[in-house]
Image (cartoon, rainbow, N blue to C red):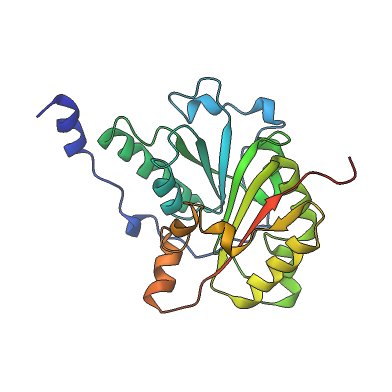
Length: 242
């Protein structure tokens, strides 16, 4: 047994029961969050050991306990991906999980990281125009009450920001177990001039799609409860006015 194996055997993955927190957080409330004033002020090197000249290309918004990130990391080893999570304990868990996995698997997971932030407020502070290739919104807070619909992570104002940070042909993946929210997200994306929905036929060749339903803790919970899962995927298109 080599030294690395000995080290890996001594490092245990964090246990979720020590990081539990309420399912959702109020995105409108003031949170004590450090964030860069501009994307140029963001020090990504401390998150990725072998970053080099690469830029972050995948963003999982509201990444929860990081299941999707951990699944995608070895699938796209050349792509840097970040999970953005507003809940303190949950983001701490993901950071600790990644740190442990890097020790257990020295050649894997160096392309994935997590930070605590409020993506609804600060997304353009982290990413430059056209920087991202993929964005993920898995099981976002449905905010059932009509008065709180403005808090939904997909809305007219925020879609403009997502279009800004996504490059042309960039892809947004959405999954929810709430039909009303699914219809809301589809409606808003289809009404936006810079997004078109990707057909089910096209999605058959996308290796990411199969991972969206059960890689996250929330997706696994829906599966256990025999709940429905609604998928909608959209492509960022060229601005027709330019």
